[in-house]
Amino acid sequence: MSQPTPEQIAKLPKWAQHHITWLRREHAALNRQVEQMGGKEPTAIELDPYRDSMQAATPQGRVYLPERITIRYRLDGGEINVSLRRGRLDINSTRVGDGFMEIQPSASNAFTVGFGGNAKHD
Image 1 (cartoon, rainbow, N blue to C red):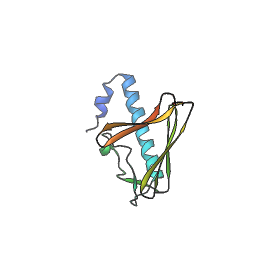
Image 2: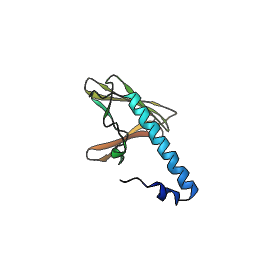
Image 3: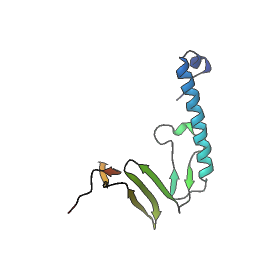
Image 4: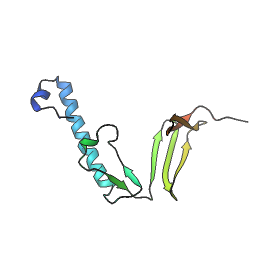
């Protein structure tokens, strides 16, 4: 993916020029955060913030997180905590209200995790 030239950017509307400038600043800030968070020594936890098509845009290459770390995702309905324990993923949630954690298959080798409706009552 080639970068637009300054001349090409200058031909865009002002709002688009500002948006490109903002995106470049955000990208640089995220790269700095990635560099500060992880190391280059391989571990079982590899951080890949550019998996969805931006792999060539990052100069860092692979970044690894310590194996004794918990990653918390804040979602509508609660939080999901993911950690690596004894070679297996440990996933648990803190929910808000009466919702419950849902695990839904999305392909033969993939699933999504989130929060759904009301908890079932006996």
